[in-house]
Image 1: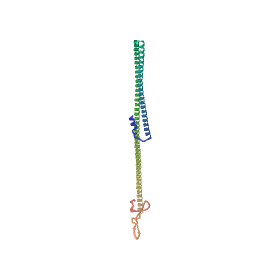
Image 2: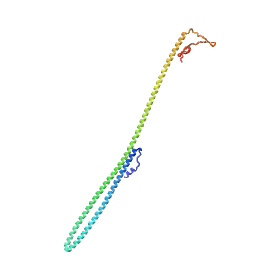
Image 3: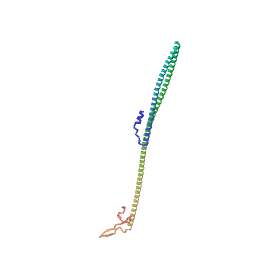
Image 4: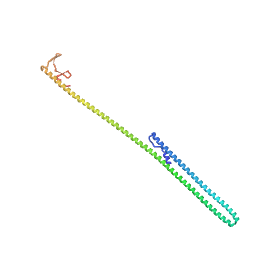
Length: 282
């Protein structure tokens, strides 16, 4: 019971302060305390019963001794009375007859005394045997109660160990689950980030491809425009050369000075450009 008291008085193991955990520990402690109280009550009851049996044994022995003493006194008184009667009778009938009767009476008295002593011894032996059986029965019941108490203590300790082990296992599983959930969340975030990066890379690649296509298309359009402009310039220049009457350029008077009239050509936009600038597209 000292070990059970130490276990019950020990501080409870640290665990998650959840209501279910507190209820389990409270129920376990309450059951252990009730078991200890039942065992204490059974042990006290057995101790009281053993004390009563011992007291009854003592009283029975005293009664047997008193009975034996009273028997001896009664037999002695009876013997004295018979002796007195025998003496009176011997005096009346004669010495020899009285002596014979007295001897027979003494023998009978001794036989009765022997029978009484044997009966008293048998009664005492029976009483002792009964007391021994009662004591043995009480010891067996006490041993059974002690075994039950130890079994209850062991069961309570095993229950507490199982509770602690289950709580530790639950904590490990909860940490493992949290770790797995965190890892899964990180993997999902990483996968989403990679998918986003791939989508952006694809968008960038598509944008680059589109811009390169647009650049190629613009360059081809620019080359085509330049080619068309060059052909137009060549056609205009050929037309001007065919319509010119002579190789002498006419002179115009501008501000009192003679200035040759430069040949003009039409641009693709409808304007005029000096002929000397032909062949140099803008």
